[in-house]
Length: 328
Image 1 (cartoon, helix red, strand yellow):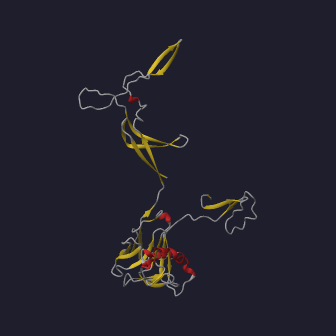
Image 2 (cartoon, helix red, strand yellow):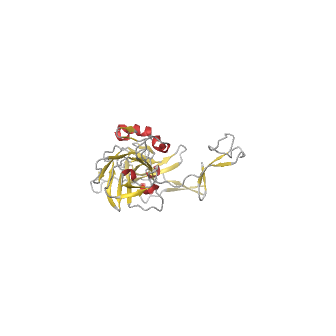
């Protein structure tokens, strides 16, 4: 559960006999039963982030995010050997890596396979682009004079991560000072430097710029129902146009000077059948037009109405089954 005010959202628990509390809470013992215990504020923003890991000789604690993805990366290595955490293509425990985190708010259930594109610009000019042209998670450089056709990283479509490992130069002349290594240094444009401005001081100006495009997949739960209109059923209507025009629909009785009204039960139904012969009237065949379908709960309460785009003509010798689908 959470509470909110004009500035924050935060979790809360009411102290009771269950003794539930927040991890690390210090005010639980001092609180009385019925008091509300409040946790830390929830974050109110979500954005794409980039985490750069410079090359090291041995695994360090700073790579805990990469290490946490080890089993996930090895799980997908059947799709491509570039997913492997450690292989002849490189060891992600010590190589230069740029980890891009995309919150699920941006894509829903998963990122659509094959839709990820990363672009690298210098002074507004495109110098290289990455695409998953094989739809197997490999980000292959499809434009640019240097590194064309090389695999520069992989995409974790279900988890929302992009790992960039391409460390070759994308341009032979352009260099830019980046605070990516332990100390600021001048570096050539590389795929591991994609999104350089995300983690730099706000007063830093760069000539390089970047673009990320992808599509999301969002699964929606749906309920499918079938409504049957059997033969010889649903062929009567209370619509006034169902009977012939001009008939008196009420009978008036005078019983001991008391006037009563009763619906006339021998009303003629309007015959709307069409015939190829002029001035020919055939036998009456009851028919209706189904335009709406009511949906009821277990207590016979009307909870929804499905409207047909075009009314369906229902005769006594025809049966229909309507398929209804509701997204939840």
